[in-house]
Amino acid sequence: MSNAVLGLPVGRGLLYLIVAGAAWGTAGAAASLVYRTSDMGPVALSFWRCAGGLLLLSAARLLLPRDRTAPSVPAGRRLLRAVATGVGLAVFQTAYFAAVSATGLAVATVVTLGAGPVLIALGARAALGERLGGGGLAAVAGALVGLAVLVLGGGRTTVDPWGVLLALLSAAGYSAMTLLTRWWGRDGGTDASGTTIGAFAVTSVLLLPLAVVEGLVPATEAPGRLLWLLVYVATVPTALAYGLYFAGAAVVRSATVSVIMLLEPVSAAVLAVALLGERLTAATLVGTLLMLGAVAGLAVGEAREARARGAGREAVPV
Image (cartoon, rainbow, N blue to C red):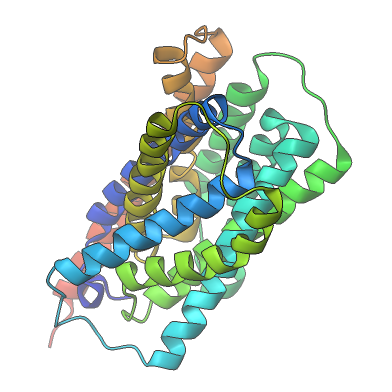
């Protein structure tokens, strides 16, 4: 895979993913405020999140200058990529919300985000030939332990088998989305902005009927506050975060991507303590440190391998 063709160095891709993971973590706090402000349901919120992100990214694409040096991708291939990514995103979000409803937030989060790195590592090894190595496997294991401690360490949980199946379905959608983005990024023909816009368009269309059934327009006594919350959700954890995610996921190893995105629950936990008045527990602290250590270890290893590949290419005689 040639990073020079993509025009995005691996180091910058890692930074994009770190910012995206932190931004995703703010969505939970914003959603909690939306639920307190109105009777909006999770599917309707997911629809408005994707539809708003689609409008923002489309406007930005029209206003900002386009990179004329980027490789051209045939229209049919762009459509196929948009549909595949959009279906993966729709399954990821909708199945996760359903899992939360069935088995609770803690179990749904652990199963979805915990199964994701495992499925992605197996898929990347089988389809992309990417190997983690001993250090990488240890980092993934440490991240999963940290996730379990962070989310489950605060109290009792209830496990519902149907909810676990839905969480695994959500993890499968997330894994497919990540692996496809990495696969397409290997040929240097990935347009991160176009991919994000296409995925949001497909996801919005798929979620619209479900959102109408649930209730598309919520009742609220604070419409101004609700509007600002929806604008934030569409802007920071959606348009910004997914744009950075698709750009970074195209140049960074899939397993590394999945572990870095575990920054989402870390960011959510920090916000819960800092802004929502939740108590800082030993489990929160230990889980956060384990996950941050795993993310840092994989990111450093990824950057070191990228530099080694670059030095190897420079050393080859021409």
